[in-house]
Each structure stands twice: as C-alpha cells, then as structure tokens.
Length: 118
Image (spheres, rainbow, N blue to C red):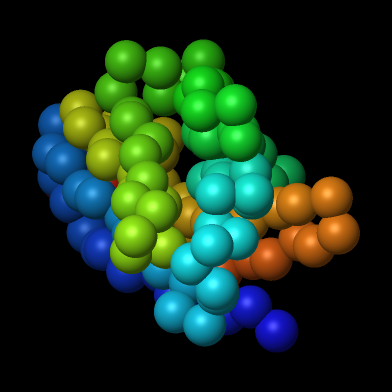
C-alpha cells in the first residue's frame, strides 16, 4: 500500500504564503512519473474540490480560484509533489489532500489543515 505523507500546513495571515509537500516514501521511484499528481481541498460544509493537478503529460492545471497564486511542482527523485501557495485568502482555508492516481490505483494523503486568518 502506497503511503502519502503531507507536510507544510498551518496558520497564516491573509496575503501570506505556505508550501505544502506530499511525499511517497514507500513508492518505487521508477513508477512515480506514471501517476497523475494532484492537490484537492475541502472546506467545512463543502465538497472536496480540485485545486491543482500535474498530469503525466507534464502540463499543470489549476482551479480558477487559485490561478496565478498557487503553483504545483514535483521532484521525481524525491517522489514528492509540492503546492506553493501565495497571496493566501481566508477562503483558501481548508483541509488539503494530495492524490496520486494511475489507471489501476488511487492514493490519498491524510489531509493537512491550512488556515488563513488575521
């Protein structure tokens, strides 16, 4: 079973920045690139929504609400996907989840809290 470990969440003031990391310590390095990598978030009382994704084609996609503020990136050698979040807003407050998905597998991180508040 692939395990995903998320770090980097916390409390930040509006306008601040955070970088989330999601590492797959027990994944075979050679298969990391075969996964679609994504970040989702879920705020209280709302559905889980896609924030950013990195398909195997290499092209990143973003939700309109974070376009220009968030950047998804990855390090294949470290088996890690990142989400750099700048210009954070109170409405970005949510639990963030990383997702590694292939044609035969769908792995989720445990979720990490991001709170944007003065």
